[in-house]
Image (cartoon, rainbow, N blue to C red):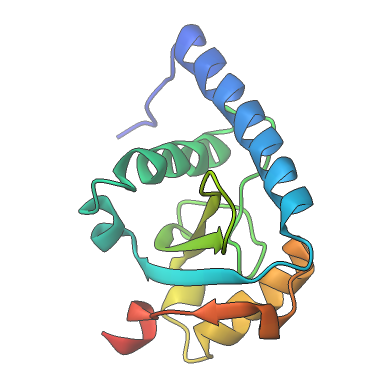
Length: 152
């Protein structure tokens, strides 16, 4: 069975969405310095059942698929290990980061791969390293609410 072919207009919409998401992340990162954050990790299937997250989750999954197919310029990747999405390295988990006390509410949604999400290593430790690496957040500024990848 061959790979699905994306139309030019669909590819253009996905690339435009990719550029908007990159700009949003840059703005989020610039607002996060020296602020406290709430970090929540969960399985993608659980997030798809949350009406507040479903559209962002499907957008993130579309961008991950765009990386696999080569239909977007930005190489989307796992937040924990920084490996790009492939057919063998698919998203299984989702992480949300919300800045405490900022109005309007600001949150970042990112994906975690099946390798990191099912690893025997501590997922919270991997997420904490990613927060410092990508967002400049120290572990002490992050409040980890729940880790269903580990708990369930």
